[in-house]
Length: 603
Image (tube, rainbow, N blue to C red; front, top):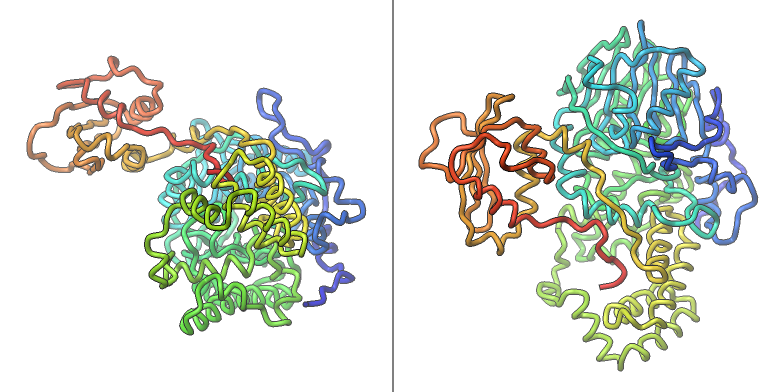
């Protein structure tokens, strides 16, 4: 086992460097007074480590818990610890350029307020989204008002498509799974939530989205915003499908977005996402070294703390480069010898010189689930064994295994024996089947909860810990209801994206015998679309030319009215139309509502 150098306090020195002031108290509330962020809750990390937290994870959580306004270099500041991500503020000629405005409107406004308290009432003169994850754009309405402010918003090419695909199309499922990996309903403390490795937690305020006004389309592209010179590096397919790094040449400061953070990142996040390209990720990190090394005195990112000095910064980037290259190439080597993803994850280890580096430890991503992600990217879900082709779904599989073993009580007894022997991993596998076969069996639920709890307490990876402890909580207390909060995001969707969202909600079999065609004329856009429900599939296209055949219904409306109709907030009888208005109701009748509260540890 690798010996970690706990006596090395360099990261603590870096995390504290440039401190200006903290938000006091460290609590952010929404307009109704509800707490959406509480950094003070993590003050227990100032004390001695509890034996319910892995020592390495405790150290990482102590570092992530730093909160306040920090100076990175002349004219560049960061607010850390007011959400999962950092908000960076770059002072320009007339105001300040905001980079990555956190998850929520409320926390972003609080971060900007803290900056202004100590640096003056500078207006926001530009916004940069480094990539398409919600913790890097969701708080934009806390720093700018698109109806009042006319500021440039820069983002990498493809930003809107990927932001919508990840946060809206698959939003309900990702939100539910995200509750587990973020530990959303765990009590903060040594027996519960101690952070996420990448930061402390995600805020619970209102996310929004304002579309970019300027796309970065190539590496080497230079832009000037409020006198701030920026040189960009596009890095698609790395930590996000649309992502970019940038250099501030006049400040000799390099922003690595989320491509280089002080932990091993995810090749596939546990909440779900597109599988990332570890090979491309490594190559873009190497390209950043080649492009920017000689112009960098400080490196900062959208999470964690900066690294000062050219040589230290490039060593850090080199180690990050090497870890993604290594896990990619070694996974390919072993899968080409016939090993499955689970087998490779069990066999593969990092070389000692990478394994002992704090910034490559698996606090957020892990070598185990990253290896499986690389395997998935190349070979998919099928492990090559024909028995895997047509397995029963989990509940039916569980019933058969349990019957084979001799019933739920027998399974629980065998699982307890494995747990008593210290094999919690297999005890959890057995008990999963017991609970799925008989979810009302209190003995199986409680034993699985206690096994999950021990696995969580021993995990170095923060998101694994949260998943285990959330599973234990729900086995004991049931699912905590949550709600979808995408209203401000859907308001920014294009017409095509709204129709995509409708298509995702169509109950195919219910709609299979409901053919209908609707033409949509958007008076505010000067655009016309045709939608067709055919064989349960919702097909749509922009109609730039003549359309063949008559529609059952033609609607003349604004894009905003379309959003109201879909959300149920707009009256059908208020829409200018030709044809049978009942057609629209028949479409609404075959739409299925997503369930943000589906069970995970029970059938």
